[in-house]
Image 1 (cartoon, one colour):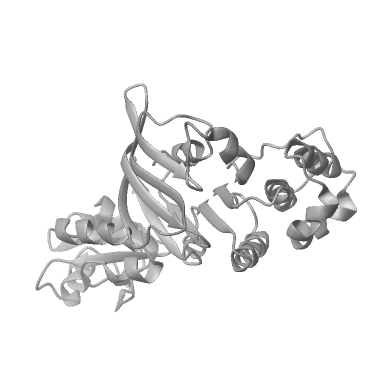
Image 2 (spheres, helix red, strand yellow):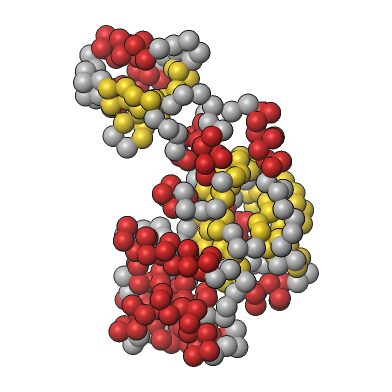
Length: 318
């Protein structure tokens, strides 16, 4: 990825300043001497499902806490719903729903008691807003008297989302909400998010799962507090530099070590049971096959494949 393409794609995200729900300009935050966010810029419009991907420690949770007015930025400006996160924190806290990565409801309270408590905190009546959570909360109703700490991971997730929605927030912030949840519950959760988006809610969500990232309207890639790329998933994939090949063989690990030592292979990383790699200019796939055969690796299959979001992210890190 060239420096020019990076700067061009980052400039494109300032595509609409109308109906901005989230706007960050040069937001920075440090913990001691360790930077968590560095001159971070982002703009999210009304009705978007906006995803953020990056490894642990990239700065996603720090950004979410700043936007939720739970911590202060060291510099820069952040606005949520047109209000400054430092000056107007009371308004922001009433107007957003925040679901942290760690289950944070009261585990000694029952399902029903947790929901009633959060409704009372925001001064709303569950009956009046039940339509907002009906599809999500319905599977929990048979367990209304069960303590939250005794719920399964998927049930805890549904309860946390119900509590975050009961006051009808204008912005929903979700910090890796499906981590550790089974595949069926993950799909159901994202189906619920799709329904909320259709009803006009703006959703900011981080995820470690690339299939979930594909369901976002736009994505931001973040690493070590810096914004790497931003755009629709297809736009990010179209900016992949070079041709991507997938390689399977009799010994994936041996093939990985061999490829890493070759200066004719630009990049290589494990991808499931295969390897994904790009080649230096002018190098043909026959070179890889011969290289591996000479080192005793067999059953080699090499084919061109379209880059995934994960491939695009890995290219930034190399």
